[in-house]
Length: 428
Image 1 (cartoon, rainbow, N blue to C red):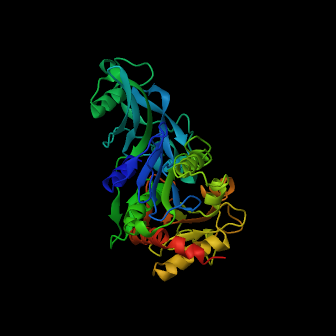
Image 2: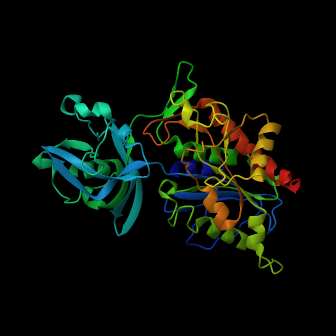
Image 3: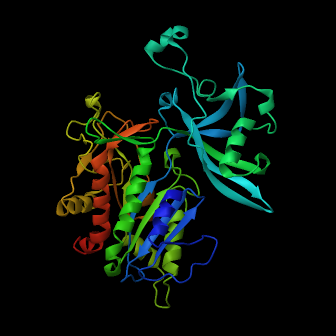
């Protein structure tokens, strides 16, 4: 969210606080709102916008499976300092072993008579979850199994009495690193929300550098494409009669049921408050329902590319390829919210703008994941299509996608912002 805000403010977007009255909203205005520092809604009001016109929205999520530091994390074993962690989401946790791990998140610190939230990212490798040598665990050849509570513990150092100076909740070694990064005293740290992360940066990979190897592609890649497309489409905003928006939710990986997840009130609250900013005596009481009926949302979440080593896991006629373009997702049980009408919108935009596009459906004998799409479609009645860029190794600590698909995704989203309002007039 912090990175998104930097991009938005560079292009003239103005921050609105949920705790203040929003005054002065106007056509051609650009604004953003956050909740919890982990969910953000950014919008650009069309130059010809009038109350009752729709919102053209791209929705994604900011969270990824990770290991989170427990409220009381101080552990030790066999002379080693260990950090207690809790799994968040459905990660492929075996990929977290023997990796150079760091921590990142937010810390509440005391500053005078005030309390401030500080973002931290230590970058350097301070943690590691070691595997057990095969000599001591020969059964590992039959499958790598471990206990999430007792065997998924990262080590942070070797016990030294002089390092354990203060907190009974967390190792001083961890607190001291946080304090140095923030520029405060250890005693100023009140509490924190920290996630473990791979310290290795993203890279271009493959013989022709046509892949991206990176942590958290699901779903920061779609979040990145969303914000880039919004700012890249601003040149046509003056002629727009709808509101262009992106919404990036937290907590998708754990079901979205929270104040800042897609099941919460954030989206409906924000739309309602924006509409209220244009309220006139002649505005119909059903203005919210009129607005949502005229709106459209692209639910953008990474898709499953055909796996060369597990080809049989994919439906034979629906095998998305990396660098083959964005993927429309279908599911008759509404795990994805795509309908024939909403799929048509993306198919038409891709065709008329020479953007490659693919389609995906799971095998009948395979389970299907879900997204924020069905939640928003059911909760607000907004027309929704589910799509994403194809990737491999979803929910691994390191994931893979095609380098060219980033451009394909941004191009499709820009086409959506620039052309959907007029296209919608021809759909009956």
